Length: 292
Image (cartoon, rainbow, N blue to C red; front, side, top):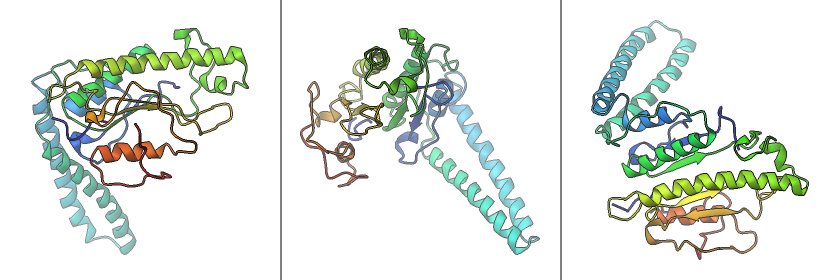
């Protein structure tokens, strides 16, 4: 998450990447293909072609919707009550598409990332993760969005990690029963993911924001899991990393341990408030998390 005031998995479902379109709060569908993420942000085609292609796509969509609207009005006069209700449900979906086009038109001038479009999903798991991280850095750098989520794995993922010498499935290993040899394998997987996080944070630190500070200085990056102990399915004592200074609100480089039974959502309340969102609670929060 960028400060607004500043100027275990298989390939099928692992890399979900949510981007709010051009500083809007309306979420968009997750995307796992780096090429499609890039095109969603910056348009299709080569540099110099993307703005024209975007304008053509918007015009084509509006033309199709105009045709549908005129045809539906003519058809509605000939339908019975039940069919009219079904048609109205259909037109409700059409109106949502119209609203999405209107939102896109408000940000019609596409940013130029000055980089080539990715070719697609790499065969290397590590390369795929890093390329998706690069897309997030580009999104923040061009101010195409200020909120992004990067899901590395779904809850039941049973991917193996031959990259680090682990051939067992991650989910199966998470039910470790305290066995040392299994915990050692899980540690290798955790280190693999932590290495990818380090790559992303390095990219954020090396990229300048508009005010001359780094993107990392002006951002809040949360890295965490939904379970503290996969073996017991326990969701207490959750370890998390909060990187970045949030525009000066946070003081990183420390180990911070909240009091017992502090909900994770307290952190999110603090982050929302730092983004300028007027909120005092979120989910099961009991207030803002102080001391970070």
